[in-house]
Image (cartoon, rainbow, N blue to C red; front, top):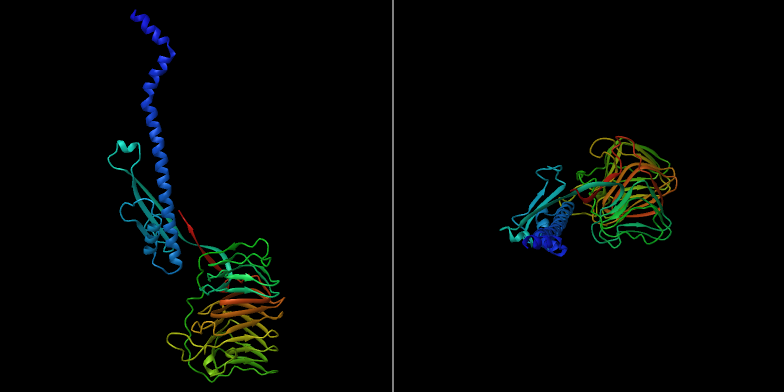
Length: 428
């Protein structure tokens, strides 16, 4: 009877399934628990990774603004906290290990958090520790030859009227304006990338098809920030050239240059003293080139400054500049020395927006080098056919009118070239 009973049970399929289910139930429960724990672990880890990524990016942006990296990262971690952290976060500006070890342009953030998982938590006294890290830093991206340094909320680059700007390089504004760069009227702008700390007004058809827009970008460095502050004494040298007169000028300090005739500049640095204009309200007379003038020079830098300048602060006596439209200039910057690659440099102690620096082009003119006006507005009126194969323009603010064809193909070792832009990105 017992044998027949067992045989009947063996043939009973429902009984078999019940037995198998009883045997497999712990395994099924364990698998479901582990699946739930895995999902929970992944969600927590993802949230922590986002927190670390955000903090590392915040630290990298702090680098671009000269802010304290550690305090910026700490504040960002607190703002995005979803889980309590274990211990003190690791915050390194210039990681101590890894592929970016010692790189001062990189920020590394490592954080840890403990989480008690719903299934394995029954068997583990302590929660599981999850560790994540992120690195972010400054990397070069894009070639720029047009830069507005104004860091306020103003419109910093204006392309107005019938202007046509064709640049084989990018334009950038450090302004946080809404917009910081725009085009007006029937302007046609070909430049890429076009970027700003604020917004770029690209709603019109001003910008050419294919333009790469990068609004709300990181501020770009001043490529000539390391240029020394000029220091000159007053001089009686007169750099004026009358109409129908030809003068061969040599480097030195001049109380002004009003060039109406032909000026041949020997290689070197020419300091223009704005103080010598006294109370003259037209400071552009510092370096003034008339419509019939001819100016040539190779290896030349013209520095607009002032004698007996204040130790600190600004002054409206810094020399200005005005180049008239009919003037013919053929100038090349030095290829070595302090002012390597710089054609014009206005002393950064000039009063901010105290005056406009005006450069009008001529189809027979050519420039090689940089026009650096860090405290004033640079108005550039190019002319079709003007040679600007190697020209960079850095001003506090900039206005383009006329036709400007900037190709920026500079001779090797000329010291003049487009500069690499910075961007902030996650590196790992």
